[in-house]
Amino acid sequence: MTAPALSSPPMGNSGTAPVLTIEDFSVDYLGETTVHAVKHVDLTLGRGEILGLAGESGCGKSTLAYGINRLLKPPAVISSGRAVFHSREGYDIDLGQLRGEDLRAFRWDRISMVFQGAMNSLNPVISVRAQLEDIFTTHRPELSRRERRRRCGDLLERVGVDRDRLRAYPHELSGGMRQRVMIAMAMALDPQVMIMDEPTTALDVVVQREILREITRLRDELGFAVIFITHDLPLLLEISDRIAVMRAGEIVELGAARQVYGEPQHSYTKQLLASFPSLTGARGDFIRAGLDERLLDLDPVRVTDVDGGNG
Ligand SMILES: Nc1ncnc2c1ncn2[C@@H]1O[C@H](COP(=O)(O)OP(=O)(O)OP(=O)(O)O)[C@@H](O)[C@H]1O
Image (cartoon, rainbow, N blue to C red; front, side, top):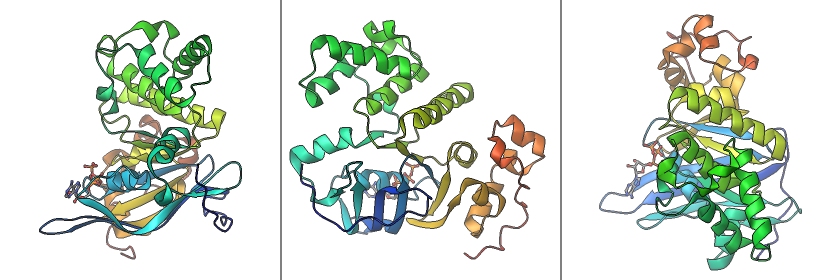
């Protein structure tokens, strides 16, 4: 794989060494009127960090995620900047320099993605086992059939699905289980970064919670970093180490989850927080919402104070 030499990465503001650095990243959709969907975004993802990316529908979250992973198609163009991956082995890879086979291999191996509505993208007429095995056949052809099968079973168990479901077809599984299978697929090759775009939005709240718990547990166990994208700010407060708030293509606020919740700086962040009643009501609401204990020491943001930010 090509590994263009770059200077060593600086420490990210996440507190750990960065695994991904996004610099001055912009994406336009060309057309009669060009849409500047992502504008000069700078972001650093720390090794093992869960970074939440929040913002209302249409603010550019998915475009940024697809752009980082070079999955955008025309009329989208990356009009500035770059995304650089810092490998465990100590070298840097500029994603913009990867082509063809290198890029495809990179995507599953180093950075994997769980797409919006992913659970519906499993092939309904192919068994779960065959779909999982396919990743290993393509990317780890040296594995024996027996080893491949063992890994598929282990993967399913890791995401809380019984290994005997390997024989099942996607339509025989619940939405939550299908989504777990997608997460298992994204984890198959032990990536260092997982980008999850609204991975639990279509699921009911209980299943959503279970999957979130699973993701944090797996992160603790395996040490991958996550960019977790959703418009659901309460959910992000629960799962993220840091949160980036995006509006009209720009990151308007970036900070530790507790800081974004307790001392939001930007007026838009305050508006977003205020738009979720469970966050701004009595403290008891907060606890019922299942938020992490680390946030409970903080005073909720004042709902009336939405114009006092620096934006
Ligand atoms: N193929 C396209 N052609 C033109 N404009 C597009 C295209 N895809 C997205 N856009 C525009 O780019 C902007 C960002 O869209 P994007 O889907 O990235 O936002 P998002 O925050 O992920 O929203 P959602 O949560 O609804 O997916 C929006 O203004 C959208 O209308």
